[in-house]
Length: 441
Image (tube, rainbow, N blue to C red; front, side, top):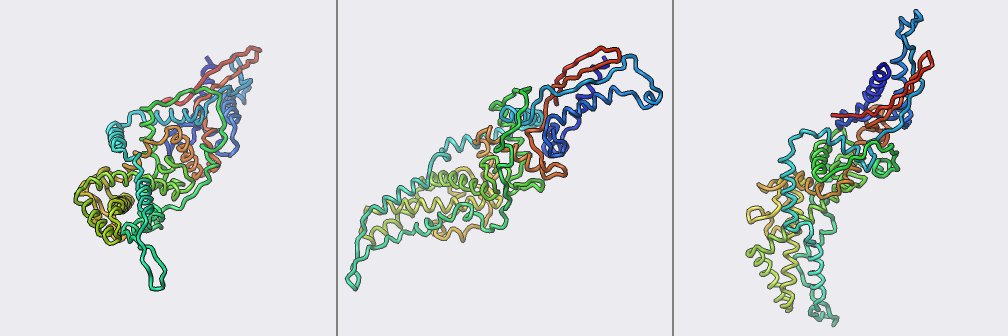
């Protein structure tokens, strides 16, 4: 009984030394095997186990002064950790299990339903597969393939007549990039940069001995996404504690800079918005007629009537692009943009399209989704294992910023331990006990 009691006290005492920074920031209970020293080793945990066992067999101070003995005079001959699991074991399954325990009981059903509904609508509308830029390129190649009439100059030289396609005013700005076009004031974009090779997803990781073989299911992945959304910062909702300010974007794209991750998100938004806006615009008869009228006038001037339709579509593609950049500007400014446009939510007229950058003044289209909603859809579409690994990076980045944790590593954060105690007595008898302890909610 004495051995059982000491083992229970010693094992629980080891687990009570969980990383406070990890718990306070992320609600996770694990022992940092370095204890903030930067010397990462399970041996440190073993020594703590031994110390607790020895202390609980020791005589009291009064007993020592009086040389009093217990009936058995028991003492700890040996203490060791024969097995353990760390946060990164089994492709981060231990980390996932702790997150699931933290999220237990959270009322997230409606939130998940909204995200799944939006994502399904996006996929049903094929917004993630329609490549509008490629369609525009093919149309431009068709325009370029036509032989245009030539005029003879005063010096006798011949010159090909320029099409003067009004869409070229918009198309010439495509190379500037979605993010540069959508956010006018670049000073508001975080400049934080990290070396990803220093973090869990890119390091050779320490491995435990296989005490935890849990995995994740599809339903659990949705709950993990909710945890990421609760704990991580994003563009427009940055956290003071975070090293990278756009952490959700990092989970999706894994770039080493906030700018790089936000730029990739802007490209994704542009892809989706162009697909959606093209579907509306090409089906809106009044707007198509406006483009057709302008294209007809140009084809007449050029004496190339067969160019009318390609020029019309070129104008429509440029209009789609300009409207989509306007949508991105609204989203990055905190406004709403519906997944699918209507007459009431379309913003740019054909005339304004040519100078679309002068007509981006933020605002809100009155209905639809915010940037965070589009971000959640992209998060949902991202591979679950990839997100979990990058979440480990985020945790390491932030915990390392706290006092005494500059060398913190999740692959040395212990979740379950198997301890073995060998007990001796003054009469020469021995007792051996083995127990497995871990964190339970």
